[in-house]
Length: 125
Image (tube, rainbow, N blue to C red; front, side, top):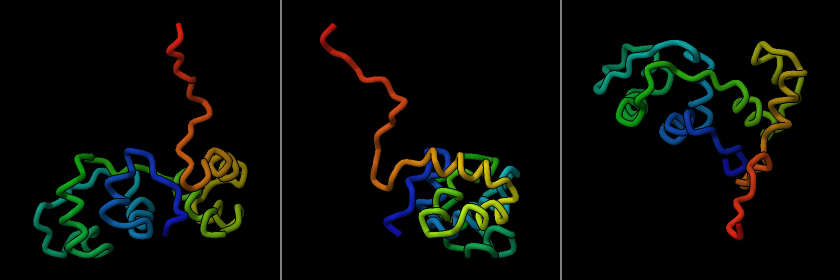
């Protein structure tokens, strides 16, 4: 999935370990809630049942957050890059089409690392 928008830093460990699709499942299922990440999951946890024991264990190794992030803006950007309509995304994320448009509009093109809001550093002063 090379056309998936780069996740913000607080989502990156989840996306790196789980992949975009499984990370989205985790964000939608557990986003906003505290979650204990067992270093040696046995398969009984909701996380291990959702993504598998191996991915749950790897996530416990790299993730230091206790609360799973709410990642709706990034999810909207991913789904839009996959061709879903604004209305479809709004229904799936339980939000308005206006909010989804704002989230999608704020996303840079894949591979574009520029931040137009960032001031240019001037060294000639």
